[in-house]
Amino acid sequence: MTVWDDLVGQSGVIDVLKRAASGTGMSHSWLFTGPPGSGRSNAALAFAAALQCEVSPPGCGACRSCRTAAVGSHADITAVRTEKLSLGVDDVRTLVRSSALAPVGQRWQILIVEDADRLTEQAGNALLKAIEEPTERTVWLLCAPTVEDVLPTIRSRCRLVTLSTPTPEEVTGFLVRGGVGEAVASYAARASQGHIGRAKALARDEATRNRRRDVVSIPAKLRTIGDCMIAATNLAEAAKEEADAITSALDAREKEELDQSYGVVERGRRPREYAPALTALERSQKLRAKRRQLDVVDRGLMDLVSFYRDAIAVGVRAGTVLVNEELRADVERISKSSTPEQNLRRIEAVFTAREQLLEFNVPVPLALESLMVALLAPAVTPPGGAVRSHSA
Image (cartoon, rainbow, N blue to C red; front, top):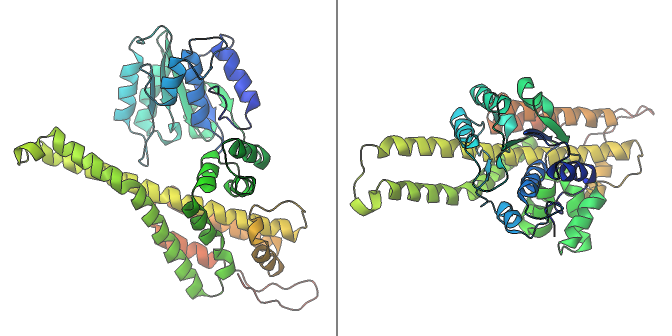
């Protein structure tokens, strides 16, 4: 198994990276872009492993460098990702200092920034200087959804690698090769819409599948304003519960490590420096929990989009396989009681809610309540003239 095997549907990208790792077209700074789930971070990590690989062709996946890179323990590969809403200047300055050091091994010092789109202005300026004047054996690998998400001065100094969304067939094949049954793999590939991490979770965890089912069943349940309020509340609470389940254990472990580092447990008292350190930790944990909840809500919103896209496909008789094939009856009912234009406006309402949450910091319950009400369209008047009542 090579380091490239997890890059699903990215044969063109793999060819470029293989040639660069072999010395053709190598650059000291790279920008990996692509839609969520396309594998930007995986591609950057695979490339980093290949650059450190000890055999030819690079990227064997079996040598010590490839193995340590895969588990995140390679001495000359540093990856930074943030659980917060942004990536601050202090984190970047730490990376910049590391980039000035000579690698421990004989090859490269590699710095991976997985959330380059979350850089603050100060952090971006700090990174720019390091990219403008790289040391001879330093390589920067930045990841972002699009080139527009990165400062123009940074992206102009990077070689661009653009990943695409893999097809359902490619994702299904990947999951089947990993031991997932054909039926579940096919469902996960459709439901994930090409998001590899999401596809893995849907294929291997029944609770994840159940949570998604609850979200995509919402459109068929929206008949009154009361239904909208209930749906918004349930989605917000479910997102918070899932986020809390992810972060609570990590929060407790970080608190325990802080207590140990300041000797709180052994000495039975708190030194003067402990209080500000605890405050900083709690602030960081609060930001992480908020981002987690927003990520979970955002995932649910994109699942809602998939439902209304299916309704449009049915309405225009596209004849394609639905993302939510298992809910075809609900999709057809919504399609019959709505026009494609109305369902398109519903999709626009979902993206408006995403913008409110991610860009304008609108409280989650308020944004979701507004969205659910917007998903209630007026009655549809078909060409024949009779008014059909709307049931979504």
